[in-house]
Length: 598
Image (cartoon, one colour):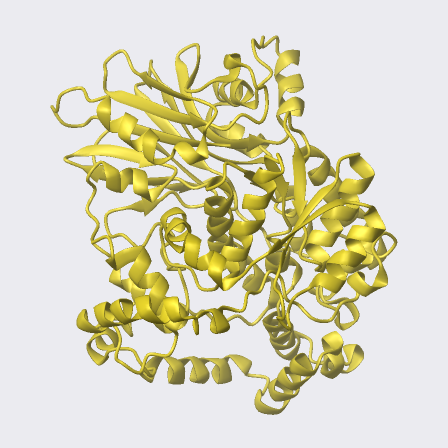
């Protein structure tokens, strides 16, 4: 896990190593164990690297790393590097280090861009080919590792963080379309164009995409992997659950590969508890870390203690309070770089901070499971639509009115069945139209008029797996990965996500939709696969919380009320909101992230 940076000089500007040093300095928290700089023979390409040592702690594995005519600056981990290394050694490829970085370079030398198909990992990297004079850049399938880029004075720059690009002078103009999505729809992305950030002149390399750069101002990103929806797997639900468990176990086993200490986040929910349970069978070290909230109704202490006691983990609680956020608000905003929606981001920040204090450098986390295993209430409604449109007889068979055994979901399903005809999409479209044509309270009318019809962010689906794919690819998952990357790297901690193993995801999308909500349970295949390991109180929990934070009460603190005055006034003067805008949290975060430094 590291920070990467690079420059491709298109202009006739003088050779400048100072810019790369300034970029690296801005990202020193991403790699406190070393930094390096490399430049090409023609002095056209400069690569920088901040190193957080995880695999092969020796200087032999330092970056940028050169092998033959290829040099890379690489951020992330290739979890199956040992398997790829064996495959290459059969081809008589010789290695001089024990690092996954050298395996990455050797794989590119051997297979070219096709090597991306072989990687199980999280990564963002640039590989420069001295002979072809070209830069190959790629980002992992789900977007766990960031890759930002932009142009300044005709030259091309890339880095792991936005602040490194702003440091060298790239324009800070705000992307008002994304600001509109944030203030109006509570979104931090444009699902129609994932390249966009909150800054007009800074783009992202999209998940599952790569590009070859040879100069100029055009970046043509190409997708190298996608989720395929099918019902190709022919096995019983029980067999599918067993296979799911095997794949998850393989993923965790690979993600435990490390030359430094590994721990796990524990929220008390099904996802993180499943990881802790499987880790306990694979490792003698099982440190767990949780965010706790005193006198908060959604504190999950009782469930955390069940898992802690069952698996005898070495456990650490982090008690998160408003006064802590007051002290660290500026640092949190600095590291997150772009707006975020809830105070739970700070709770996660504190968990990684505690892990670092306890000498843990790698953390396993349960993120990603909800997005493709049907962890949200809305997923039931997508399945309802699928059955109404395609298999209405299944409604009676599955007794969907009682799905998920929860009051909220039951009401939603009753509404779905009462209000929707078999032409469900007409009803959905009419609702979407009403939402998009009505100016919400607090959004400035001029701002609303300008952006209300641009890239309307919501898309409707009439089948479950298309909705899940959209969640994975376009709207939902990547923002969570961004939050986790920024929070963990703020403390020089690497976060690994076992549920985001591409073979596991591919397997789930090859199953019948009914298996994902089997007998009316969300995440049914995960629940069943873990039922012989986890306590029933966890396996069949009906509520979903996660590291939720009491942000509404935090905003009542005198300190926040004071700084909100300037924040609110700024957004009002810029005609983004009116005085009756209600979300004080978003006002504060938008101002601190985007306007205060303008």
